[in-house]
Image 1 (cartoon, one colour):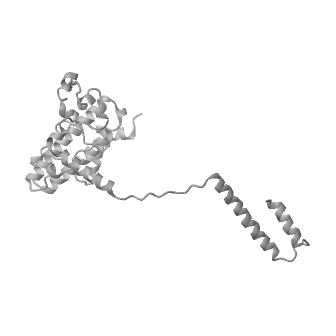
Image 2: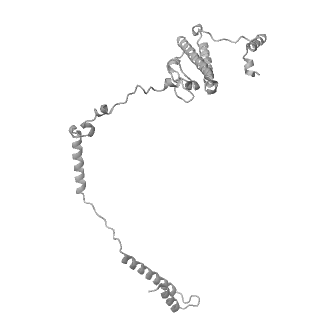
Image 3: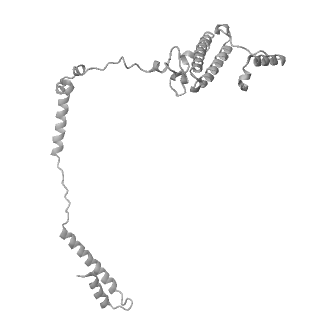
Length: 248
């Protein structure tokens, strides 16, 4: 069963629609002139150019579908190129009528990925048409023509200059080296102070720990001596217990 869109495109449906418009008093739809030179009005030429651009945009969106098949894609690509040539004719006609020069100031033709369409001059390929058999090979670089250099050809350029044996002959390196040596000798003549850090030995660390314990013990004794009694314990008993706790 045919779709509604297919029914609307049949010849009978279009003839019936035209008759209905005539009966309603509507004007016949205006058709674009076959030749751009038949147009003598600049606004009308601009209108036909914009109509062509809308048709191109519609077909470019359709050609992105790779499932249309090879023949349909090729037909769509041919129609787009035909519309592009027609757009060029109308742009030249607009320039002749005193309008803008779109060929000079117009944007570049880009695809959906933002890249310039292959084939900047002449026939162009859009969307899925770029992946058709025999098309992708047209835009791939031909690596067969690039010949690799042999080892003997590469060794022809290897000489004393390649290894830097004649770098001193240009008279540039020697003054720089002399200046660097002068700066180095000047820096060596400066007095540099050496700072030494006294690292304590194991015995010094042990004596430091003992002195710290003695200091803490004395502070604790003085603190307890200032109190007459602590929970029924006399000063003498507190002093003896501290000596037993801290040891000698």
